[in-house]
Image (cartoon, rainbow, N blue to C red; front, side):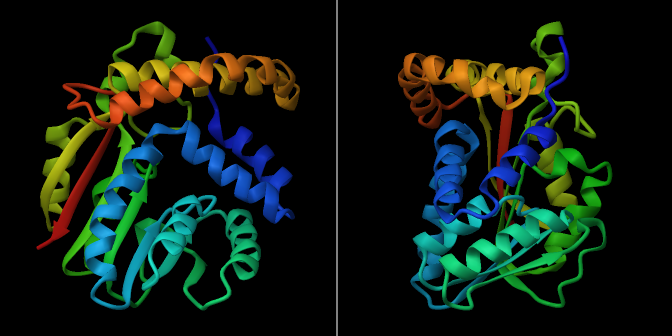
Length: 274
């Protein structure tokens, strides 16, 4: 089976939504709906962010902001947060600046080009997120140390990545993603690396467990393979496909959200700067 290449598909969507506020809002809503990691991340951010937001202005570093999906969620959910978003992709950053200048009138967010291996914003933050980024970087421990150096003592880091179980599905899921530097992390590995980077690990949890993985295959993997193969023409069959499968996929995602997964294809870690 051919490898799933996310970047070409993401680039196509980026061009479509580039100049439309409405389409970008719709795109964010679809990302939050389809990608189970967003369910877990938003749930955790709500819990951690409420405590910080009640204490006045607080700052967050988005290390690898991509489309700015979580930045919009943060700014919409918390009135006192200020976000510095960094990424290596100039086109994504330019599109985000254009959108957020119209959407968020206050000076509450900046977008800057930065390599996480050489990260130096000159600031310290109360929190940081790094969502589905570390698996793309060979020197991941160096990135964790750089993020740690940018946090105040007690500041939290929330990360998400594929787990090492993502390579256990046999030949079928060897196609998982063709852009990763590693298959994923185990609980022990990510905990050891975060500890070495100067964090105290609070919670490590597998996502995309039994139910979440089945929902991902139906709602994301198969459609992505169709997009890779036939491009945007895949929209046509998907208009018939999604109304049938999505109710079941949403129920399976909900089951994953409240299940203590013994294993799963994704993993998140919540840690605090020592």
